[in-house]
Length: 97
Image (cartoon, rainbow, N blue to C red; front, side, top):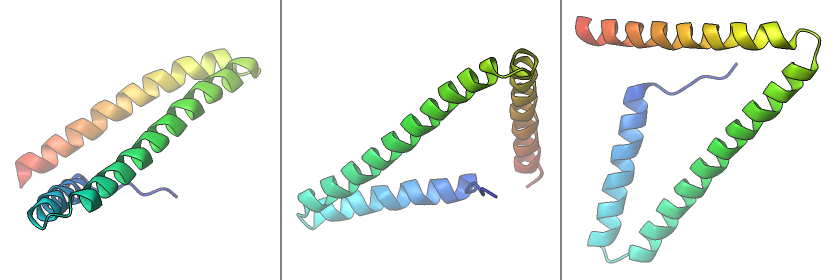
């Protein structure tokens, strides 16, 4: 089961990166900061590229299967509904405290 980090964890990670970047510049370790930022950027780029390729090849695989045409249309509607429900849930939780 894949667990996704919470939005607050992502904010904490980004703020830690910003703090690390400013700290390395303050300590005159610019090369170290650039290596950290470059490593993070390469990792993010590889993950996004992998997800995009998985989506493209997954769609092609579904289109070639016997159930393909109906499933793709249903999946797009289900993913849109899931996105709206998650957004409404997060908004409700944020407004409640």
